[in-house]
Image 1 (cartoon, rainbow, N blue to C red):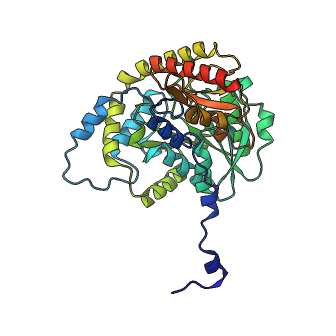
Image 2: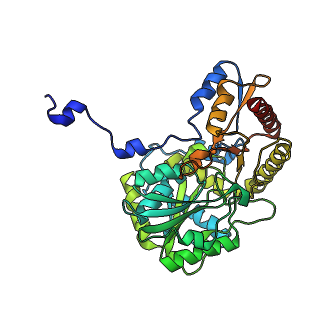
Image 3: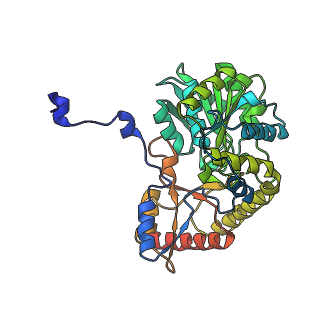
Length: 406
C-alpha cells in the first residue's frame, strides 16, 4: 500500500521531543576517547561519576545466593524487604518515614521522572539551579515540563542567589522547585539558611519541593547535609529521589527510591510503576544486603573521597589560570579554565594531544546549564580515580593547558 499526500512524499517525521532530547555532555566525547585508546593512548577518565571503590561484596553474595526457581515479576512498588530497609535507613537518620512513604524505582533516574510527571502537566514549570545534573534536561523533555534555570556562579561556590532573585522566577505556571544537595556537578552543599529560603518559597507559593539526595552521605569538613525531609509545615509537598548507585558504588544496579508523605503522590507513582511492571529483582535483593551493612562502608568511603578532593585542589593550585572553589560534598567540582571554549579543548585533549602517551577526558560544563552561553569556559571533574591516577591526570591537564595556550 503506497503512502499518499504531502506527509507521504516528505517521509515520516520524528516527534519534537525526539529532536529536543540532548546528548549527554558526559558521554558525547566517548567516540573520541575510543579512538585515542585505539591509538595506544591511555585515557584518564575524570568525565563521569563512576566510582572505582569496590562495591560491597554483600551485594554480590546476596544475588549469588538467590535460589528461586523462576525469576518472576516483583511488586510494582519494589520488594517489601527493600522498602523496609529504606524505611529503617531513614529512621536511623531521624526522619519519621513509614512503609507507605517509600516506593522502589528503576534507578534514581526513574524516581526523578516519576516525580516530575506526578506534580506537573505538560508546559508547567519547575525551577532549577544551574549548573545542574545534566539529565534533568532530558527528564524534563520526556515529562514535557519546562525547566526554569536560575544561574549560580563559580565565584560564589555555586551557592544560591538571594530569595528575591529566586522569587522573580516564580509564575502562575510554576509547580515545583528542584534541588540537589550535595550537588552534581558542583559539589555544593546547601546551607541551613539556603534550605530555609527554599522552604519559605515553597510554603508561600504552595510549590512542591523535589529533592535529589543521591549524595546525602558525601559531605566533608564536618559539614552536614540538610534533607528536605527535615523541613516542617510542607511535608505533603516534599518528594525525595534517591539511589544506591553512589552510596554503594553500584551504578549498574539501577535501583532507586522515591519518598513522600503525600498519599496522592504515592498513589500516582505506583500507577506509573505498574505501567513499567517492576524494578529489577536481583539488584533489589543485593540492595537489601547493602543497606544491612551500610555502616561498614560509608565512613571509609567518605574519608577516601575527601582525601582525593584535597589532593586534587592541592595540585590544581599549581596550574595557572584554573579557578574554582573546593567542593563541600559529592565527588565533583566545576572549574573555570583559561580557554575560550571548553568543548573544543576537551575534544582536542582526545584527538590531538598526549603527554607521555596519556591524556585526560573531561566533561564540558556547558551541558550542565540550561541557559545559552553559560559554562562555555568551564569543565566538570569527577575525582573518582585513586590518588596515583588522579595525580597523573592533573599533571596531564597542566601540560595540556600550557601547550594549548601556547
